[in-house]
Amino acid sequence: MRRVFTSPLLAVVILALPFLYLGIQYASLPDTVPVHFNAEGVADGFGSKSSLWLHTCIISVVALSTYLLISNLHKIDPKKTAKTSAATLHLIAIVIVLFLSVINISITYSAVNYPASFNLTTVVLFAVGLLLSFIGYQMRTIQPNYFIGLRLPWTLEDDDNWNATHRLAAQLWIPGGLIIAIIAWLLPFFSAFITTIIITIIMIIIPAIFSYRFFRKKQA
Image (tube, rainbow, N blue to C red; front, side, top):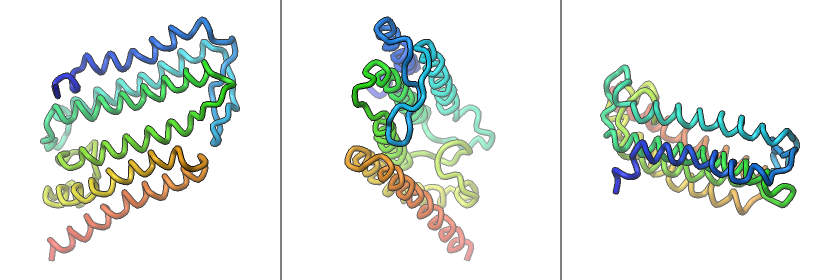
């Protein structure tokens, strides 16, 4: 089953879904559609419906590039210390592709249903929370590398520091991401956004301080 979720074919399918959805809905779209939304999720920029293809392509290219980078990390890491299993790296890459494809589909969905109420920013914030929680879960097994994880001077130079710091980070990122996902639906967007920034800073600062103190303690 794990092999299915880490298959490159699955990545291709997920990348194709936004194009498929846009293609199905394209004929029913009005000539002018919303292409930009403000902080409250209200459309404040419009363009021709053909511009949706460009938006979909740009996000998909970013998703594909990220997938290729992370899934091949064990081959290209200059430090040659990416000991994380290839299956784990592929799984992380797949989830990021899924995250960006959901954003892609949500943009088209908002255009299809405009002017009906659909808060795209809330969906994005919810997806960000789930992604952070997933990354936190994977931090328990990610090994030292230059591309993913908490790449601090002290973690990169000491495997013990890396492992201890990422174990702590996992304990913060898993619930922190879930809290962000929940508040995305409970609070007005601006309040949810500010809370997300605060939680994210805490999720980064605490492991960074821990890593430095671990380094000083080991040095002593």
